[in-house]
Image (cartoon, rainbow, N blue to C red):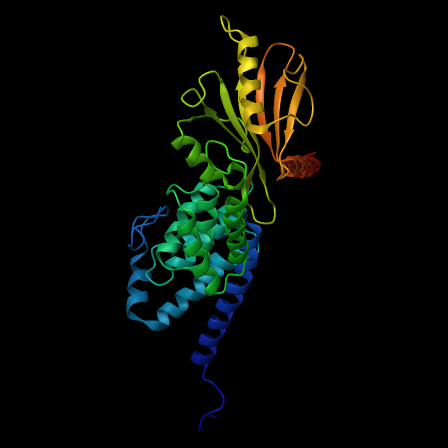
Length: 365
């Protein structure tokens, strides 16, 4: 009996199903990545991975037999990508591990692993960044998006400048990753802000910079980082920049739509010290601030104990000189809209944590 030329044979139908499944997963993968929240050397991903070496069967099959590669692709979808889309994250990470060194499928396995680690609670950004970097080196668009995301948040082991991040995002967007456009818009906004901003701190438009950019500049200016107790706050020793100051802190707001950290407030703290005249220091700070920013828009110089003086900037930024009753002085720079947004976002996150704890308690009792 002659086969109908219009009907594909079983092997062709199987290949078509695999291709369609991969296409569907690629499209859904964009949605999964959207939930997740220094140039690299031109080389392939290292053979050593977090999971160990690929099995001899997988490697030999991928190189020698297209049908075996087809079967392995089906396994990758079933064991790695589909559990990711179902939010079975531990299962996805375990299933992806067998494919990390696969010469043809390794890029997809690394990208899926990166997404899974980002979606975990609490997320594991360092592991996610490692897999994103490996996927990027193998040319995977999702990997490029995720590695740029981590780089712009300072979460990658390799420092990434804005130009490198932009290149990865443009390549990801061209390959069909629409989420990359949001981060490209973030970079465009930052560039425009830097060109227009009149406010400068240590000769840089500090509120226009993303977290790793500001961190690098503060270190370059001579500030030494200190351990911070809060995820959204960075602390430095400013002795080399301003010897009278005891600390410099930056508080960030994390935009839930892009996942990026923006500086919301920053400033110097001058702790009371034995043998140092607070009156003399206060007078010096008053002179410097009034010479640079003019007449205060609120309060008087010097501020009375327990009060403060403020300067309102054209860009909506606010500068404050605060004096507490114990003699501690602070000079604070803040972006009021971001400060309010940070408080709202922190409150929303705390509400989510409380609801999750309540649900766990209900299930356990």
